[in-house]
Image (cartoon, rainbow, N blue to C red; front, side, top):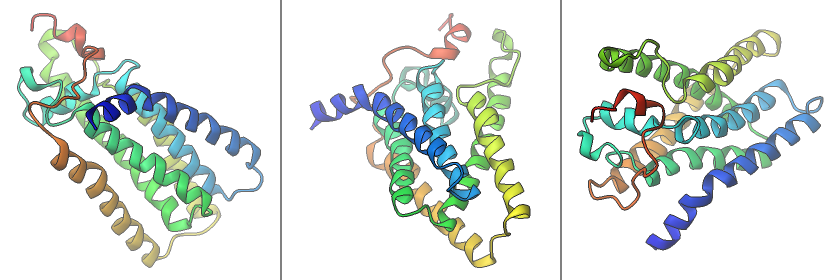
Length: 223
């Protein structure tokens, strides 16, 4: 099983990139067909793909920030509580979920989940950026940038604004729709974050991030 998991981890970024490209093509082809909320939800799935690529590779290093925030020592910062396996599950599940929901017409309540995710990503990465700036201020960190912030501001924030505009132009969601979206979002968060991490986190994880600290390398030269 470990061999299969490592094989998947070695290629899953390429797979979601292909999924993202396919969704962009669908978005272009169906631009005049899909309602605005569907277009925004699909754009959010594509944004999540770009977000993962920024966090993992370009420039990468999100795991290091996350693990430090959650109390990991420097020795465990490459694997605990977040490892490649747990973070893959955290991100791949909603990407797959978005694709399945698109097959079923992207129900309106589901689109609202992506509205919530967009707001959450902007808030979380802004807060994390402020925390990291304070933490590494003595090592030359001058901005709140952290891996994931660029796609949060350039992708998720415009999508969040787009949803608000759609509420005025198309329709305002009902209270029931909002409540259902909140419930479904909490369930998804429990599965993607809590379940994945609580089930697979391990101080001796076989799936550490083994290609360096990415963006944070320049602030950790003395460690």
